[in-house]
Amino acid sequence: MLATYTWLITGCNRGLGLEMVTQLVRSPANIVVATCRNPDSALALQELRNEFSGRLHVIQLEVTDSESIERCVLETEKALGGRGLDYLLNNAGVSEQRDTAFTFDSKGFMSTFHANVLGPSLVSRAFLPVLEKGNRKVIMNMSSQLGSKAWKFGAPYATYAACKSALNMLTTKQAFERPDLIVFCMCPGWCKTDMGGDDAPLDPKVTMEGLLKFISSATSEHSGRYWRWNGEEIEW
Ligand SMILES: NC(=O)c1ccc[n+]([C@@H]2O[C@H](COP(=O)([O-])OP(=O)(O)OC[C@H]3O[C@@H](n4cnc5c(N)ncnc54)[C@H](OP(=O)(O)O)[C@@H]3O)[C@@H](O)[C@H]2O)c1
Image 1: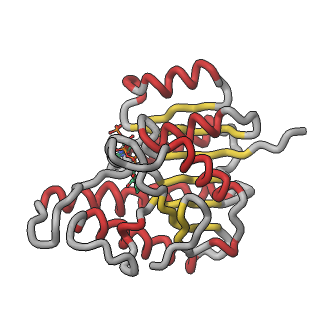
Image 2 (image 1 turned 45 degrees about the horizontal axis):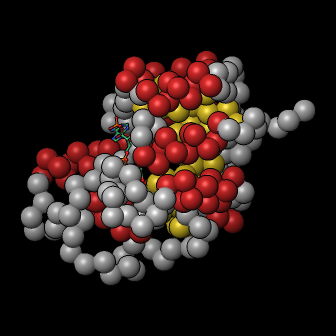
Image 3 (image 1 turned 180 degrees about the vertical axis):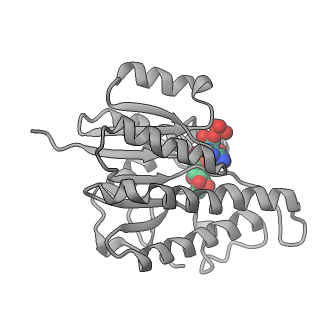
């Protein structure tokens, strides 16, 4: 019998999340829970669900809303019919773009930290019992190389960089606390999406193929570390 794997991804309405869902559902080995803020208007996900019904579940999830997270856990457990989750991909994120440490807007700063740091922390905490029932027990936190202190990028993207650094630290704490899980963060590279913009050099099809290949074969050796989509390690 074909081994199957269960995946849950946040922020799948568009961009990198949608690309990952599109690639994963093409394999009969995968059962995918694609979450998004507004399933009723997520037309691309609806089309995929029609094509791959039974292996793609679309569930509402706003990562800054605890009630939405709790509902999503219950609906995911129902959709998976008691199976655990093998892979949790915390992909959803926002960016304050090119703000700086002395020009940032405090509302934007708070909402970015809420979506990019508290959001994935709450999601991982809430889904822990479902991951514990999974075989692979993998959490991938979507970071960015902008969160690396070793990369001297300069002044812009202050809020975004600070929150990805915080997400990196959360990842190391999760890995220390739970050595039975495989928890790491990744940079997808600068990709053409609404967030990355048209000038981005990388095609999400290529980067998400590399990133998913890396995640699928990750072992405890990779836990607590920071990886690029092509498998290179990034310095903190
Ligand atoms: N693109 C790049 O070059 C790049 C580089 C480095 C890192 N990243 C990271 O990769 C991830 C995906 O980026 P992307 O380029 O795909 O961005 P994107 O095109 O802007 O898409 C972001 C996705 O996240 C969802 N989202 C935002 N806030 C959310 C929330 N509070 N709850 C649930 N979903 C939420 C959005 O939902 P709606 O559609 O409902 O708005 C959207 O589906 C992010 O974590 C980003 O920081 C991207």
